[in-house]
Image 1 (spheres, one colour):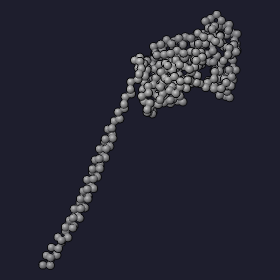
Image 2 (image 1 turned 90 degrees about the horizontal axis):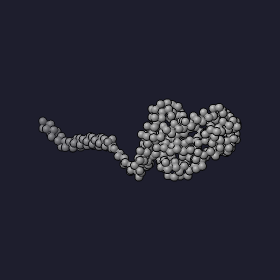
Image 3 (image 1 turned 120 degrees about the vertical axis):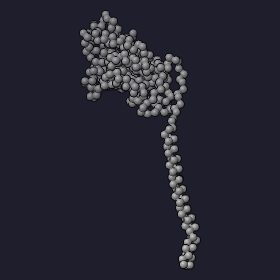
Image 4 (image 1 turned 30 degrees about the vertical axis):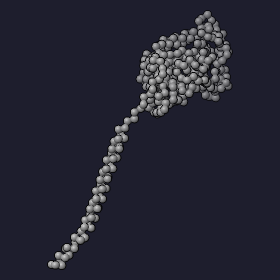
Length: 337
């Protein structure tokens, strides 16, 4: 019994060490647990904080312009990219309204030679884009939002963006809605026509012929960049239907007059090909678009040059038909209005 008591009383001598170990392990476990909870809470708060951060974009400064210009100054926000440091560069919207073979292709290359102008070509030559006013509006929105990507796109730092639009590409058919769009969205119009409609007719017939025959090594080209190619295309001399000549010229005149009447409420400028040929600096157009003045150049080469008598196969018939009419002036190569 005494031995039992002695053995029992020896245990407490070791117990303080065991207890200390237990307390230490417990403290370590609790510390790890508490640290893990704290870390989770910190990360949760951090994530919540990131989720609620809002970037407040500084508004663009007011441009120094006349009050009447305000509707025509825009700050587009493309969906496909950021304008970055150019976000506060104002952009003007424009549309070139013209007719086929009126020099609009050459004119557009001059505009696109400017570092701050993007003219995106005949977008509405594709029929589905002009099938109704909704598709027309959607296409225009994409262009003026700077989301239309083409070889002419200057993207971020564009100062003027637009397109070339032929009168027979849904423009006259939907003119009322298009005028409303232009006036509502602040789109300026550049009219480009030819004064000498007989020269335009020669160009139309020659271009139609080349579309079928493809004189340049089996390739049709509406515009050329070398004198040699221009000479090959100019060798073709069309035969003009003398009976339909005056009615056709009248129809073009009437269409032009209608277009000017339909779009007279827009902010616009009227240009003629003959004037642009003599002064292709386009200073008036650059002022109209409010872009910095630049010297503009084009690689395109004029196809039909010289007297009309050398460009029409049945010249005598055409001359007799137009003599004594108000179209007689078209017979002179230096015709000016």
